[in-house]
Image (cartoon, helix red, strand yellow):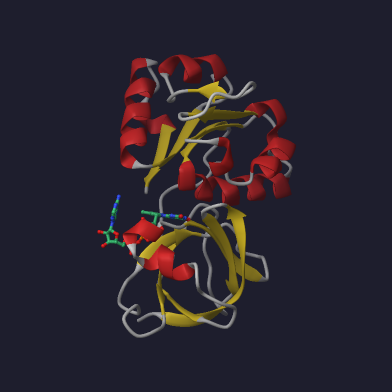
Length: 222
Ligand SMILES: Cc1cc2nc3c(=O)[nH]c(=O)nc-3n(C[C@H](O)[C@H](O)[C@H](O)COP(=O)(O)OP(=O)(O)OC[C@H]3O[C@@H](n4cnc5c(N)ncnc54)[C@H](O)[C@@H]3O)c2cc1C
């Protein structure tokens, strides 16, 4: 059975991404990287569950999500564009297999960055961020979620790649085995992948071609 919580605030993170803060339900526990099914508690929507990843940490006062909206799908994320503080949300049990196993290269596509937001926040808190790298693939610069934050946190270990725009200082095109190889290092054992299936399948093949063993590939499909 779902439990109920309430939206506290909603803000724009990019032109099509929302940052949503909700009251943290008593007794809720999760680990950084995990997701949860939620539904909007209003007629016509309370049976339509979608999963989103916590971008807050478990010991924070609230729970937070970063959600990419798709107006053309006329689905839940479009509905969230008109949600307001005080609106009720149904939530289920947290789940998910992506969590920090050791230093590595994080490879995200679009909204696939969300588990890494929580994981990086947690690493920052523990003073363990140094050395980890993030390769973040988007169509355009305007699509990059929390660019300033990752810049400040990771510096030159934050690599952006844009498929639909050429900008100095940003890689252009799609992620390739060469790009991954360029940023690989012996002490970066793990490869964390999250994004659309097509991107993840392509990157997994590239990792295989680079001789990365499956046990060092940690993935979550969106
Ligand atoms: C473990 C996990 C964690 C996730 N965490 C996040 C997160 O933190 N943030 C985030 O933004 N996303 C996350 N996602 C993705 C998210 O769950 C949804 O896939 C996404 O929000 C779908 O939004 P929607 O508005 O299309 O919703 P829906 O209500 O699912 O879809 C509405 C309608 O759109 C249709 N539709 C689907 N695709 C298309 C298309 N390409 N063109 C036209 N219509 C289409 C569907 O058939 C459906 O009828 C996560 C996914 C997983 C599996």
